[in-house]
Amino acid sequence: MTAARPMLLLLHYDGGLFAGWQRQTAERTVQQELETVLARLTGEHVAVTGAGRTDAGVHALGQVAAAAVAERWHPGELVRALNALLPPDVWVERAQRMAPGFNPRRDATERTYCYRIGLDEGAHSPFRRRYEWAVRPPLDEPLLARAAAMLEGEHGFRALAAAGQEKAHWRCRVAEARWERSGSGERLEFWITADRFLHRMVRFLVGTMVEIARLRRPLADLSGLLDAEDNRAASPPAPPHGLFLVQVRFPASCYADE
Image (cartoon, rainbow, N blue to C red):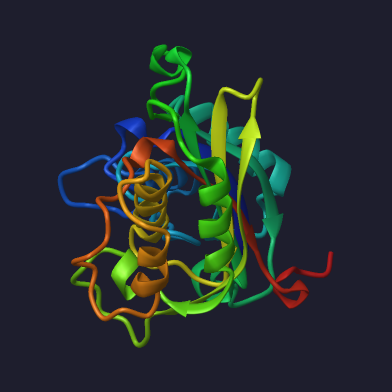
């Protein structure tokens, strides 16, 4: 058998026509598309592991996956071969050899997500509505900023995530959380970086903060939700199509010396 080493794949994808990242029996997924193409290129099944299991409809500008491929594959050649066969809603930006045992899900130290909200009528354009949640203003932006600031640090996020998860613990350390205007000011973006994320956590956070910014619930509610035991008091999660996985970070020891 040809020797194989872990290869990092930096991925972009439009999640609109996918049932999420993780392979499913009867649904189209990003993992499945990658494994199918790698099997065509190598003549054998190659398992692909992703750094984050994005939900149906969620996009990526910086998803990281790893696959063990034969040494004969130069990273640049693998990128060209993959992009020649992958469907148009998945693109490999680059590939890089990694140290033996590299696992992007286990080894990631931080992930960054961005959630986009469109505030103007143009948010309903077919060229934007797949990638932004169209929200009718006004939104109290100073309240959004105060809400985001409350998230920084270590908290329990069980009340701001999907129910039914099996976790050893519910605590996440948020390094940064902020709202900012983008484009020509017609869009708000929520940026959050943390050591780990629970299932639908970013969407629950955005949904709750938007309700606060619409003055439909007090800011103090967010403080009460942090470290709460269930999500019954959370606002409905924001829709998936505004969410992007932007970046995943790893320690230097994960990278191969080449």
